[in-house]
Length: 414
Image (cartoon, rainbow, N blue to C red; front, side, top):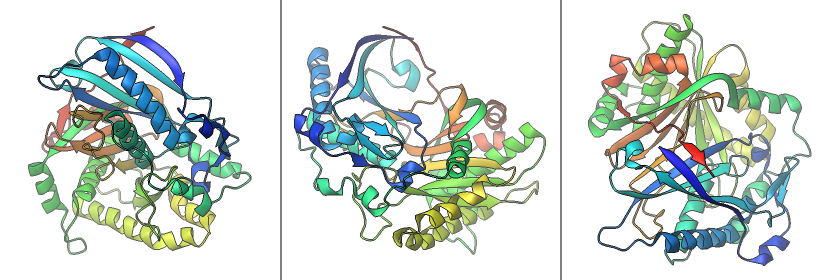
């Protein structure tokens, strides 16, 4: 499959008043995050029985994108010295392309018409910010109101957690070692249907955790088999840590709106020290739930202003010693396909573009998301190549997880 780039330009906020706004301050939480990129892809089918004018559609998308940037103007600026964002007139790279082939070849769908990809820096946005921006863009494109209800809340993150003049280098180095790992990484996608999730919930029950959620049981399952695969790949057992990204917006008091820009999330850390051959799923599920409870108890530290202590409590267990580290993010309660409707209905599919690479951000990780087509929950798994090869050939793992096709980056031409 070949991709031909037909247009490349910088798109700016449509209102020039935005250019005069004061610099947007990063929060202390933003200052800790590395500026890596994760592309989000949304696929849409041609509406049945309707005329789909490509030229008009592309022009409308660009115009509505510019309107959405009025609302989320920091996305159009540039970061200065890990402290603030300014120069909102710089704009965002906007690329249009044609695919010589059928997108159905990549995502097992039919009659695909258009794909929209958002690739934003994690320095400025987390998954919740990205989702809110997509909803605003989609609303403007279909002629609805995509404006932010209360613009004063856009920068609430930096007001609650003001930035420091500088972050100690040892903290930044530790974060770099956590997010960026050397070695070949590869990504595969798997889907869990309702029957698989129900069976895993039953296996994850215990006296300590009587009602495990679908998120907890799936993370526990992925962690277990990633650990087992890593043991085989390395030939030895090491302590294992799993980090869960936790959205702070609904946990803070008062709760913050979804459109509040920045990295308003924390990390819940679970540690498995045993080298036993058998890893019990119910024990991992309990560890994950317990980590969330501990995280919730520590939020008072964050709101009292002791952010550095909060961050130290989060990351010290992750950066000390020789351990396997797996990260996990759940988008199950973040993306609402009904709201990312550009006027052609909700997306038939969405995905995260992660290809084989030697240097990959976040290292070994899992992302959970809805998969409406296959009526289940999709796990996007990134591991080192050897560990992945072992995992995807594990019959016990495949008894619950069904492999999905993975599109590799096509060649592109200008």
